[in-house]
Structure formats: C-alpha cells, structure tokens
Image: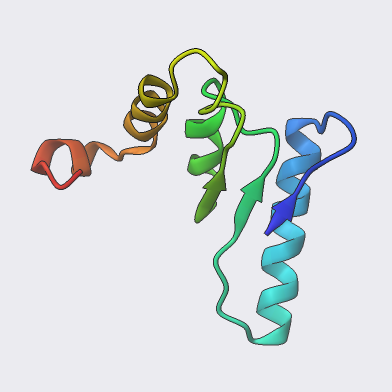
Length: 90
C-alpha cells in the first residue's frame, strides 16, 4: 500500500512510488495488491486505477459532508471498466 500524507505529491512522484512497491514485491517474490491511500479524489481516481493500482482508498472524496452516497456512486462509476458496464456485472 502506498500511503501519502504530509504534502501534495505530484503525479510523477506517485507513479514512481507505485513502481517502487511493485519492484520490491517482485524482487521478494511476493504476490501483492498495490493500493493508494491518500490523495484520491473524484477527479483523479479513474486515472489512478488506469495505472494498474489494485486498491484505492478514498475517505474525503466520499465523505465530504455533502452527499456521501452520491460521491460513492460517482467514484464507483468512474472505476468501472467498459466491459463491466456493458455486461452489467457492476
């Protein structure tokens, strides 16, 4: 899990951290799920998922005190693949 805190991370820094985690796991012979916790927004979640991230943790993007149910629905829709949408699986 790549956890981000304390400052804003650039896209390039985040991608580098994800790659580092994957390389460490590969070198150790470990089969892992790579996740990001922190910095996930409704605006960037789909892009992050496109990087091959397996788990996305997003608290503030969902629980913004306005409409958590709507936010979760928007986030879920963004993370669906075209195949999942067309076959009705999600």
